[in-house]
Length: 391
Image (cartoon, rainbow, N blue to C red; front, side, top):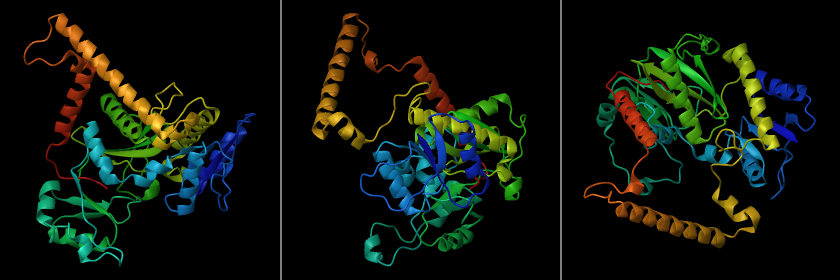
């Protein structure tokens, strides 16, 4: 079985990753750079697993990867989800999950393609209320693209005039405006397979090659545990097997700042040698497990049963038809309703149902209640007033 690698201009990671896997001399696994030159409809891929580092910038690669998934290959990261994700949605999701995140709003574009005219934009309010935006985020604030990385087109604004000027420079980019977190500590988490998470002190304010500064005692044990939990929560919900999550820590609260990095920096000179070796080892283990079927994307740890699937996969698997899938779903809904009715009936017979009480079938478990309480407390604590956020 082959493991393929799609890469761009990065230098130190690609060949080292391939060499690491091949040096294991596994009888059933080899790794190589993908070789592509036009792909026929329905063409099966040569590779059981493909690690994608560049398809966000090369549309042909993204199209190829979608077909590879359709034909049964495992792609890291999922090209369908990666195509739809953006930083604004991720902030909204983070808030729903109880992970502290800066106050964030998405803005209309400044410019559009020539075919878009004023008649096309009749649903938009004009002029925009810039002061209301800054009243929401607070000052200073960060204006940055909803899709993108490398700190490109990121502006820190201190008043309406600076905000409008930065917005005008955005052109056709979709931009988000975000509270600026004045942090006391900052970390970047390298996340592989959703469950292997390495927390590293990171300084976004110094030159690129100096940003990683390993220090095992940088965070208290309790804060380290929370950062790991929140990074896992985000990557598990998003389904990314290869990602980095950054947290700006203010008054002991880790705010998720940047977690849309599906092709993260893995160059040895920037992440440093210890972290580089950790990436090679853990990413190699992951792709080998996927290639052998010992693990599956979107699976709970220790299982090979996917916890997520594409709707079209259901219609293709085992000769199932769309009508058959729909019929099975309807039947399951009916069975669930019957079981719920039986449970309520049994409870009523026991005399446990009083006016104003919750139905027994709807009572949350103690663990669910504890989790909801913790998430609410975190959300309230993370929503305290403060200066800032970092892009």
